[in-house]
Amino acid sequence: MPIPTPVLTIGLLLLSNIFMTFAWYGHLKFREVPLPLVILVSWCIAFFEYCMQVPANRYGYGYFSAVQLKTIQEVLTLLVFVVFSTLYLGTTIRWNHYLGFALICLAVYVIFKEW
Image (cartoon, rainbow, N blue to C red):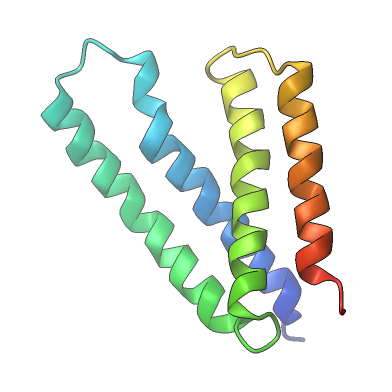
């Protein structure tokens, strides 16, 4: 039984965001590592992100519009980043961050609603 398009698309987008978050922010705990090495390692991690992001958009386009795909990707990016920054970097999420995320959710509603 094939995986439903929305599940496949969102699953691949989620995995791609996990890889990209580590590529962009994982090195922040290792400030002693030379920047050129950090860039090289980040590019290597980002390769796997692309291996999931591109198919996600290819599979999802048609079921979702391009704008909807981008919106899903951005929401997943924020969700992954909140978990990552809290658990990996030890960041505290404050009330204004939650308010900002709530406003983004409102934007998602506006984008996905049929007007």
